[in-house]
Amino acid sequence: MIERERVDGIAVVRLAHGPVSAMDLELCTAIAETFASLADDPAPAVVLTGTGSAFSAGVDLRRIVDGGGAYVDEFLPALCAAFRAVFTLGKPVVAAVNGHAIAGGCVLAACADAVLMADGKGRIGVPEIKVGVPFPQVPLQVMIHAVGPVVARRLVMGAQTHDPATAREFGLVDEVVAPDALLARAVAIARATAAEVPSDTFAATKAQLRRPALEVMDRGEGDDHTAELWRRRATDGWIADYLARVTGKRSGS
Image 1 (cartoon, rainbow, N blue to C red):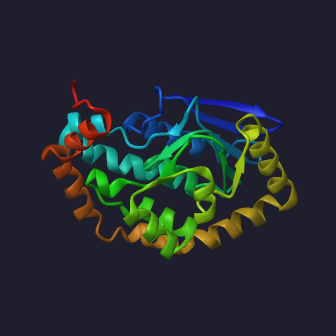
Image 2 (image 1 turned 135 degrees about the vertical axis):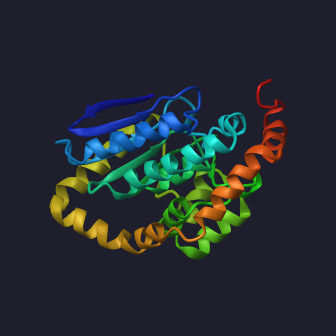
């Protein structure tokens, strides 16, 4: 589900959950637990990457439909906890986006301090509103922090996915890298960041920069209504119809 290794002293965390590392309750819980443990790990920085052609294809919508409202009530807090664990780690985190990073996968990458993406056919973006669900405050504030409110509005309301070059123009990606050089480049950036700034200074500065976003996350304004809409979409057929349109298959088929 999550693979960990050490490369040149840097902790490399690899999502390896099914063919596209779709975010379900189990993966979200594992991400949160893994990043909580990295706070005390001797590695000075972290690289977060995926497997195969995907970084993460986002929320496992079939689980949402099959689990209904009860699953949503358990899943949404776990999803937000996963994002917060990555977003608040007091060490440099570099996302090495090896392929598709869609919806929650895009948000997960945006939690990092630097985002590298492999050149090629991978797409990145946040099409949540097409799925019929709004953002909880945690992922919404991650996006606003990552690219600013104007670009976040364009990405969220536009609900498109983008190639690596376009994503770099938006500021969603910091650097586009040849696929075979992606991990090495991410490790090099992580090492350099950790070496050039004292660890306590980095952690304090990162906390300062992210404090406004965290304060809004903590207030959770509108999250009860957001959860209600997720529960509604899980049962009213909208997500099932969306899945049928994009995959040609309904949940359970």
